[in-house]
Length: 222
Ligand code: URA
Image (cartoon, rainbow, N blue to C red):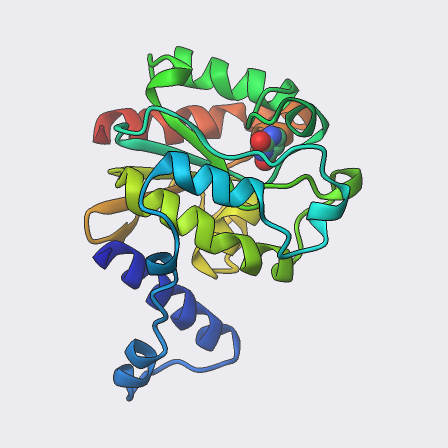
Protein backbone atom coordinates (compact mmCIF):
# COMPACT_ATOMS: atom_id res chain seq x y z
CA UNK A 1 0.00 0.00 0.00
CA UNK A 2 2.81 2.37 0.92
CA UNK A 3 4.40 1.71 -2.47
CA UNK A 4 1.18 2.56 -4.28
CA UNK A 5 0.85 5.82 -2.39
CA UNK A 6 4.41 6.67 -3.38
CA UNK A 7 3.67 5.72 -6.97
CA UNK A 8 0.69 8.09 -7.01
CA UNK A 9 2.81 10.78 -5.42
CA UNK A 10 5.57 10.23 -7.99
CA UNK A 11 2.99 10.53 -10.78
CA UNK A 12 1.75 13.80 -9.38
CA UNK A 13 5.29 15.11 -9.02
CA UNK A 14 6.01 14.35 -12.66
CA UNK A 15 2.74 16.02 -13.68
CA UNK A 16 3.73 19.17 -11.77
CA UNK A 17 7.23 18.94 -13.26
CA UNK A 18 5.74 18.77 -16.79
CA UNK A 19 3.83 21.97 -15.95
CA UNK A 20 7.14 23.67 -15.24
CA UNK A 21 7.24 23.43 -11.43
CA UNK A 22 10.52 22.46 -9.87
CA UNK A 23 9.94 22.66 -6.14
CA UNK A 24 7.23 21.49 -3.80
CA UNK A 25 6.62 23.58 -0.74
CA UNK A 26 3.31 22.01 0.13
CA UNK A 27 3.70 18.26 0.15
CA UNK A 28 0.65 18.02 2.45
CA UNK A 29 -1.64 19.02 -0.40
CA UNK A 30 -0.37 16.15 -2.47
CA UNK A 31 -0.91 13.69 0.36
CA UNK A 32 -4.43 15.02 0.89
CA UNK A 33 -5.30 14.46 -2.75
CA UNK A 34 -4.00 10.91 -2.52
CA UNK A 35 -7.18 8.92 -3.24
CA UNK A 36 -6.99 5.37 -2.02
CA UNK A 37 -8.49 4.06 -5.22
CA UNK A 38 -7.62 0.46 -4.52
CA UNK A 39 -9.65 0.33 -1.30
CA UNK A 40 -12.90 0.16 -3.27
CA UNK A 41 -11.74 -2.80 -5.36
CA UNK A 42 -11.63 -6.48 -4.33
CA UNK A 43 -8.53 -7.71 -2.55
CA UNK A 44 -8.30 -10.98 -4.44
CA UNK A 45 -7.04 -11.47 -7.97
CA UNK A 46 -9.98 -13.76 -8.83
CA UNK A 47 -12.57 -11.20 -7.73
CA UNK A 48 -10.68 -8.33 -9.33
CA UNK A 49 -10.67 -10.23 -12.63
CA UNK A 50 -14.46 -10.59 -12.41
CA UNK A 51 -14.82 -6.87 -11.67
CA UNK A 52 -12.71 -6.06 -14.74
CA UNK A 53 -14.76 -8.43 -16.92
CA UNK A 54 -17.85 -6.36 -16.07
CA UNK A 55 -16.16 -2.98 -16.60
CA UNK A 56 -17.74 -0.45 -18.97
CA UNK A 57 -15.95 2.67 -17.73
CA UNK A 58 -14.50 3.60 -21.12
CA UNK A 59 -15.39 3.21 -24.78
CA UNK A 60 -12.89 0.35 -25.25
CA UNK A 61 -15.52 -1.88 -23.62
CA UNK A 62 -17.79 -1.29 -26.62
CA UNK A 63 -15.38 -2.80 -29.16
CA UNK A 64 -13.67 -5.51 -27.10
CA UNK A 65 -14.31 -9.21 -27.57
CA UNK A 66 -12.74 -10.06 -24.20
CA UNK A 67 -11.29 -8.27 -21.26
CA UNK A 68 -7.62 -9.21 -20.84
CA UNK A 69 -6.67 -9.42 -17.19
CA UNK A 70 -3.16 -10.14 -15.89
CA UNK A 71 -1.97 -13.71 -15.51
CA UNK A 72 0.89 -15.68 -14.03
CA UNK A 73 2.29 -16.46 -10.62
CA UNK A 74 0.52 -14.30 -8.05
CA UNK A 75 3.44 -14.91 -5.68
CA UNK A 76 6.04 -13.79 -8.21
CA UNK A 77 8.60 -11.09 -7.39
CA UNK A 78 8.56 -10.04 -11.02
CA UNK A 79 5.69 -8.15 -12.67
CA UNK A 80 5.70 -7.18 -16.38
CA UNK A 81 3.44 -4.39 -17.62
CA UNK A 82 2.59 -3.95 -21.29
CA UNK A 83 0.47 -1.37 -23.05
CA UNK A 84 -2.78 -3.11 -23.87
CA UNK A 85 -4.22 -6.15 -25.63
CA UNK A 86 -3.77 -6.66 -29.36
CA UNK A 87 -5.93 -8.77 -31.67
CA UNK A 88 -4.70 -12.17 -30.39
CA UNK A 89 -5.15 -11.11 -26.77
CA UNK A 90 -8.65 -9.80 -27.51
CA UNK A 91 -9.52 -13.15 -29.12
CA UNK A 92 -8.13 -15.29 -26.31
CA UNK A 93 -8.58 -13.08 -23.23
CA UNK A 94 -4.91 -13.60 -22.31
CA UNK A 95 -2.05 -11.04 -22.23
CA UNK A 96 0.93 -11.30 -24.56
CA UNK A 97 -0.05 -14.31 -26.66
CA UNK A 98 0.67 -12.83 -30.12
CA UNK A 99 4.03 -12.26 -31.81
CA UNK A 100 5.14 -9.73 -29.19
CA UNK A 101 4.16 -12.24 -26.53
CA UNK A 102 6.24 -14.98 -28.15
CA UNK A 103 9.25 -12.68 -28.04
CA UNK A 104 8.54 -11.69 -24.43
CA UNK A 105 8.43 -15.38 -23.47
CA UNK A 106 11.76 -15.98 -25.24
CA UNK A 107 13.29 -13.10 -23.25
CA UNK A 108 11.87 -14.46 -19.99
CA UNK A 109 13.13 -17.97 -20.73
CA UNK A 110 16.48 -17.22 -22.31
CA UNK A 111 17.70 -14.21 -20.34
CA UNK A 112 15.91 -14.49 -17.02
CA UNK A 113 15.94 -18.31 -17.16
CA UNK A 114 12.37 -18.42 -15.88
CA UNK A 115 9.18 -19.96 -17.21
CA UNK A 116 6.37 -17.62 -18.27
CA UNK A 117 4.10 -18.98 -15.53
CA UNK A 118 6.65 -18.01 -12.87
CA UNK A 119 6.23 -14.27 -13.52
CA UNK A 120 3.11 -12.08 -13.56
CA UNK A 121 2.14 -10.26 -16.77
CA UNK A 122 -0.45 -7.53 -17.15
CA UNK A 123 -1.23 -4.38 -19.12
CA UNK A 124 -2.08 -0.72 -18.59
CA UNK A 125 -5.50 -1.20 -20.20
CA UNK A 126 -7.48 -4.42 -20.12
CA UNK A 127 -9.39 -3.95 -23.39
CA UNK A 128 -8.02 -3.75 -26.91
CA UNK A 129 -7.67 -0.26 -28.35
CA UNK A 130 -9.06 -0.47 -31.92
CA UNK A 131 -6.55 -0.72 -34.78
CA UNK A 132 -3.74 -1.34 -32.31
CA UNK A 133 -3.50 2.31 -31.40
CA UNK A 134 -2.00 3.28 -28.03
CA UNK A 135 -4.50 3.77 -25.20
CA UNK A 136 -5.46 7.38 -24.54
CA UNK A 137 -4.76 9.15 -21.25
CA UNK A 138 -8.48 8.92 -20.38
CA UNK A 139 -8.62 5.18 -21.07
CA UNK A 140 -5.50 4.69 -19.00
CA UNK A 141 -6.93 6.80 -16.15
CA UNK A 142 -10.08 4.66 -16.05
CA UNK A 143 -8.16 1.39 -16.10
CA UNK A 144 -5.16 2.23 -13.90
CA UNK A 145 -6.92 1.52 -10.57
CA UNK A 146 -7.23 -2.13 -11.67
CA UNK A 147 -3.50 -2.33 -12.40
CA UNK A 148 -2.59 -0.58 -9.15
CA UNK A 149 -4.76 -3.07 -7.29
CA UNK A 150 -3.05 -5.96 -9.11
CA UNK A 151 0.32 -4.54 -8.04
CA UNK A 152 -0.96 -4.11 -4.49
CA UNK A 153 -2.09 -7.75 -4.32
CA UNK A 154 0.93 -9.31 -6.07
CA UNK A 155 3.38 -7.05 -4.19
CA UNK A 156 6.32 -7.66 -6.56
CA UNK A 157 9.96 -6.77 -5.92
CA UNK A 158 10.47 -5.64 -9.50
CA UNK A 159 8.15 -4.16 -12.12
CA UNK A 160 9.37 -4.17 -15.73
CA UNK A 161 7.43 -1.71 -17.85
CA UNK A 162 7.45 -2.63 -21.54
CA UNK A 163 7.63 0.37 -23.85
CA UNK A 164 7.07 4.10 -23.52
CA UNK A 165 3.31 3.95 -22.93
CA UNK A 166 3.43 1.53 -20.01
CA UNK A 167 6.17 3.50 -18.26
CA UNK A 168 4.56 6.89 -18.87
CA UNK A 169 1.04 5.91 -17.82
CA UNK A 170 2.25 4.05 -14.74
CA UNK A 171 4.57 6.75 -13.42
CA UNK A 172 3.50 9.95 -15.18
CA UNK A 173 7.12 10.50 -16.21
CA UNK A 174 7.40 11.62 -19.84
CA UNK A 175 11.16 10.98 -20.18
CA UNK A 176 11.69 9.24 -23.54
CA UNK A 177 12.01 5.48 -23.22
CA UNK A 178 15.37 5.57 -25.01
CA UNK A 179 16.71 7.71 -22.13
CA UNK A 180 15.03 6.03 -19.17
CA UNK A 181 15.32 2.34 -20.16
CA UNK A 182 17.51 0.29 -17.88
CA UNK A 183 17.27 2.84 -15.04
CA UNK A 184 16.04 1.64 -11.68
CA UNK A 185 13.22 3.78 -10.28
CA UNK A 186 12.84 3.01 -6.59
CA UNK A 187 9.54 3.11 -4.75
CA UNK A 188 10.24 1.76 -1.29
CA UNK A 189 10.50 -1.97 -1.82
CA UNK A 190 9.48 -1.95 -5.48
CA UNK A 191 11.99 -1.27 -8.25
CA UNK A 192 10.57 -0.19 -11.60
CA UNK A 193 12.80 -0.98 -14.58
CA UNK A 194 11.59 0.39 -17.92
CA UNK A 195 12.68 -1.34 -21.10
CA UNK A 196 11.68 -1.46 -24.77
CA UNK A 197 8.42 -3.14 -25.80
CA UNK A 198 8.77 -6.52 -27.59
CA UNK A 199 6.73 -5.11 -30.52
CA UNK A 200 9.40 -2.43 -30.92
CA UNK A 201 12.05 -5.15 -30.91
CA UNK A 202 10.20 -6.96 -33.71
CA UNK A 203 10.50 -3.80 -35.80
CA UNK A 204 13.98 -2.89 -34.55
CA UNK A 205 15.90 -6.09 -33.80
CA UNK A 206 19.11 -4.11 -33.18
CA UNK A 207 17.54 -2.81 -29.93
CA UNK A 208 17.43 -6.36 -28.52
CA UNK A 209 20.88 -5.89 -27.02
CA UNK A 210 19.55 -3.13 -24.74
CA UNK A 211 16.69 -5.31 -23.49
CA UNK A 212 19.22 -8.07 -22.89
CA UNK A 213 21.23 -5.70 -20.68
CA UNK A 214 18.08 -4.54 -18.85
CA UNK A 215 16.98 -8.13 -18.21
CA UNK A 216 20.44 -9.05 -16.93
CA UNK A 217 19.99 -6.22 -14.44
CA UNK A 218 16.60 -7.62 -13.46
CA UNK A 219 18.10 -11.10 -13.05
CA UNK A 220 20.81 -9.75 -10.75
CA UNK A 221 18.22 -7.95 -8.63
CA UNK A 222 15.92 -10.96 -8.25
N1 URA B 1 0.01 -7.88 -25.97
C1 URA B 1 -0.27 -7.40 -24.74
O1 URA B 1 -0.93 -8.06 -23.94
N2 URA B 1 0.21 -6.19 -24.42
C2 URA B 1 0.94 -5.45 -25.24
O2 URA B 1 1.35 -4.36 -24.86
C3 URA B 1 1.20 -5.97 -26.53
C4 URA B 1 0.72 -7.18 -26.86
